[in-house]
Length: 129
Image 1: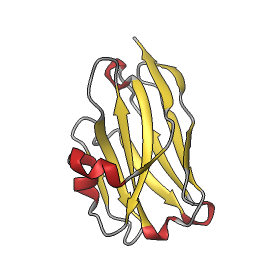
Image 2: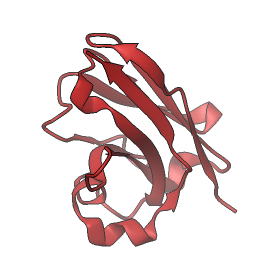
Image 3: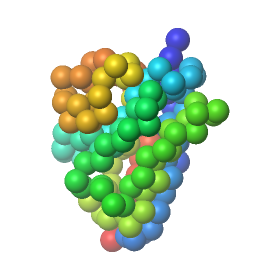
Image 4: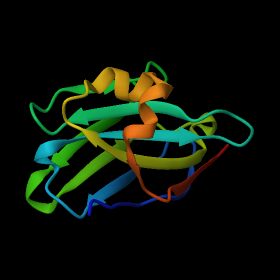
C-alpha cells in the first residue's frame, strides 16, 4: 500500500533555504507527486508537482524561480529545494501521490483532484522576518 512521508521542515530566517523530502513506500514511476502548503487561516495551495512518467514539472507563480522540485528515483523520493524563503512561505507543507495519468498542472491547481491523492502528514516550515 502506498504511503508518503514528508520531512525536512524547520525554522529559517528570511532569505534562507530548506530542502523538503517526500519519501514513498512504492516506486514513483507510476505516480505524480504534488507539494502543497497551508498557512494558518488559509486554504491549501498547490505549489509544485512532478510527473513520475516523464519528469515534467509545474510551479505556482508564488514559488517560481525560488523552489525546485526533483526526483530521486532509486530512493522513491521527491525533493523540494526552497531558496530565498519569505515569511509568506510559512505553513504546513504536504506532499501527495497521484495516479501518473493526471497532468502535473491540474494536480496542483484543481482542488477537485485532491481526493485522488495519497497524502502525508505534513511538515512545518516557519520563515522568520
